[in-house]
Image 1 (cartoon, helix red, strand yellow):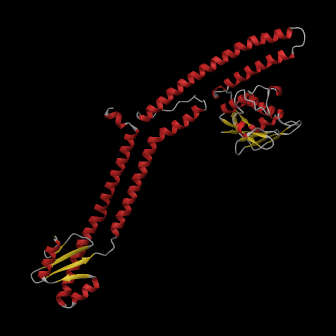
Image 2: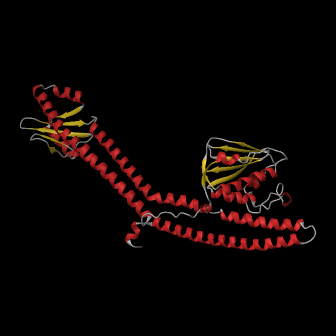
Image 3: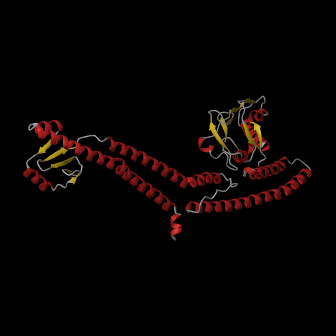
Length: 408
């Protein structure tokens, strides 16, 4: 892999971002302590040490007893014996930095030494630094602020790197629902861009195969319907009663019609949508057996013909499996964007609910050919509802079954 390719790998880009953030934070801390803490502290330290030492020298020069008073008051140790001073310097390997012609100091630390020497006086002060240095706290505070800012911009950069992943995930969900009308926009030229192109190519191939299957099914359906129509006409022209033969032909025709319609609406771009208030739309289903509970205005983009077909299938199914003259309830919940259709029938076993929308599926206890239908009604309903970007769910009400349509 070439160097230019390596730079575009996701791992490489993240490595560069985090490595750069670490270096930026380290530099920020170094600069903060160098220029915001150490330099001001050293300047203040050196200036104060000179004044501090001069005052002690003046005090000891005019008051021989001042040494013990100063040690007690300032919590320092003053060594005036020249040989003891030299011994301490050699023993601890002290290195002094000259501040003035007669004052020198060791490196500032928790314990440091001040050496005072002129022609007449010679002493050393051992200081235990217990003072509070607010400038260092200020440097730490500013360093933390800068570090947080760097982390924030690092987070934003990582977020921008992974932004295509969110789009890929969103479109992958759409592809999983069979909606291939949009492709994922390609951003940049790295690994995620290559992944996006691969997914787009896969989506195009799947859409092409589904379109071919759809066209083939529609063509076969139309070809079969023609001889079925001729066969029904010939059967009806025969003498005698032939209700069973006619019903069988009707059932075959119904199967083909449902399959073709389900295939037509399997892609939402085939819908002829318009903005419709769902309150007005469901009002048409009010009858002696069907109670409709309206709600506030809910404007949706729906295909009125296909949605009417779906709701009629649900309502007829509810009537079929409810007791005679039992009430069917249709309720709109505009806030939740849900439409409920509830019957008073025996319901469906929980283990069978997920299979209700499968083609040709009929639970033994409630659905059979003797009751009418071929197990394609809810399959068609599912395709129509999905094409409208809505969800179809079933809930046992004990008694009764509730069909819930949730719109986006």
